[in-house]
Length: 394
Image (cartoon, rainbow, N blue to C red; front, side, top):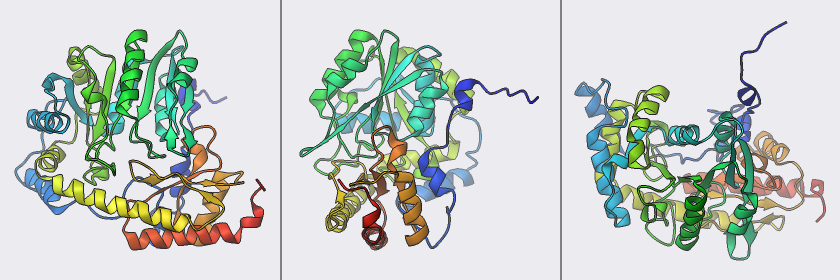
């Protein structure tokens, strides 16, 4: 008899649907890879040079587990200027990747027997992170409407339980592109204050919006004593996905706790990468603007190409750089994306993995070069049209 040492919560975790598909063909040059949340252009040279110079200068030793002081200072200047605030620097921690910040935040608040709420559709690793704490998870879903994706806060109120300890919201949203209005953020924050529920606000797409320079943020609303942790990072705005560096803004009274847990989980963010992050903050506004323009054009191409396919319903995203189309009559999003990959060499993500109720959807990233994006979209439409008679009638 083999004895298994895994906790039940860990043993029950499943690989998410994105990597389930992608790992079968990752790195295949024939594949137009629209499955991950990144484009196909490398990080700008001036950021890469900063990392190389830090290495050449011998910046290879341990540093503060909450991040270099110079980086935390640069983040304060950036956030103060962006949001018109005066942020207490003790609230800023750079533990490593943005996802690590979410993981630590969830571990701080939740344990077995607790309850957590996730606003979906959402990137699937969030549910796994919450499940690993032992907490029970409930989804509250955004709803599609003529005005775009929207969230009804009454749905959140209905989902609350006596043991609800945390709520996760991602805005701008991966995968729908929904952007939470400031007025609704204030209302949700007040609810979390009243119930002492930790609100984990994932704002990593904060600069990936199309009608303004920055998305509404809990940063402008949350007091230092509020049960709010805002998580963000460098991966999306500056095209630094592989660098694995992000930040959190949390109550200053927990600064020591963040130092302790950052040391436990990661011993701090990679040291020479932190110099590259400083450079991105101080010199990267042109990069942010250029990428936003590129993504905006990608969004137009998605609307143009998928809009020609009667089987597809598309709600235009307000932010992030994903489309989350509905294929009317689709019964298995996994079989659909596997078919597209096998027959058309295009990698996309199945809708089921973004939470319940999304089986008719798939996600694609439009951050890629426009030529590759257009070709990938044309292939997807070709696949749908070729298999049209296999979809359920609706």
